[in-house]
Length: 193
Ligand SMILES: [Zn+2]
Image 1 (cartoon, rainbow, N blue to C red):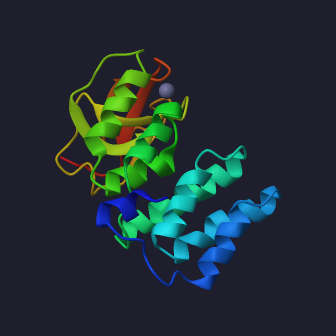
Image 2: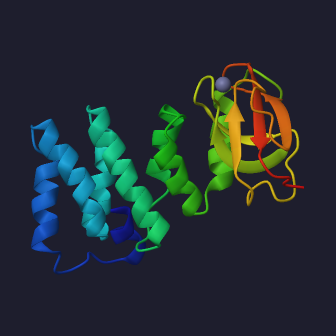
């Protein structure tokens, strides 16, 4: 049983009936039932629910896996409950494009470990040093977290990642995606400097 139980040295007591029902559901043979339980479990942050969601990260169904990751992300974002990082990191190593899981890990303070996994996964294109607000490559959908340069207010001013400079905006940077090796333009409508 749970990582958390071990961490805190005791099993939690009096787990909700609702949680038990959802845990039964997430182990059902019916994919739709499992997918629904994976969504609903985010409402009950506790050891039992989190362990069930972590198990569901290796479900055969992509929908169930995605729902479970999204539930974990919401729990992490709300800071409602401790989530063990290692099983999540393991899942991201297998599937580096898994956005919700990476967001969850970032919320939990494992940003550097996520970066390390990503830098091992994608090898095309140059290595950039400057960290930016994460966005997706418009060509291949890979998440981009480092760029050659980033304006001082790049985060506060709305920006767009584009395949070309058709919409030029007030300011832009240019980079090569490490996922696909193609050129990406990040464009700001207002001056972000
Ligand atoms: Zn790309």
